[in-house]
Length: 128
Image 1: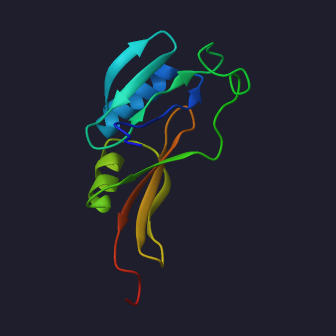
Image 2: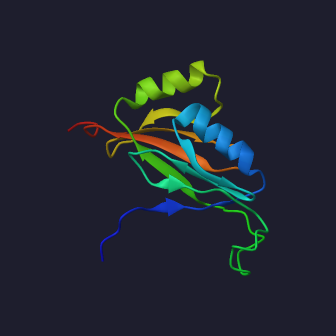
């Protein structure tokens, strides 16, 4: 198998709200927009394709569901600078910047549809 691209497609109630969040604050752009979905793209990560809950393009078994327990994780350089920038922009931080003992520095945001976005930078673990 040779994968040429990847995407995640969460069901959302407001496609426009997710698009505005990801394009305004996270540097994505709309590469395709149509009734009921939008493809949000960056050259350095997988696409995010919010789809309107109830859309007929979704399998009937998940058509009305909203995602739960799903997180978009973005590994970045200088996570502290990203945290500071997003705070300056007034983006609500769901989980503040913290260091985990296994070497993960992270913080989390939540988009208007409940999509959790985690920013991660790997650092030497405490005591290493």
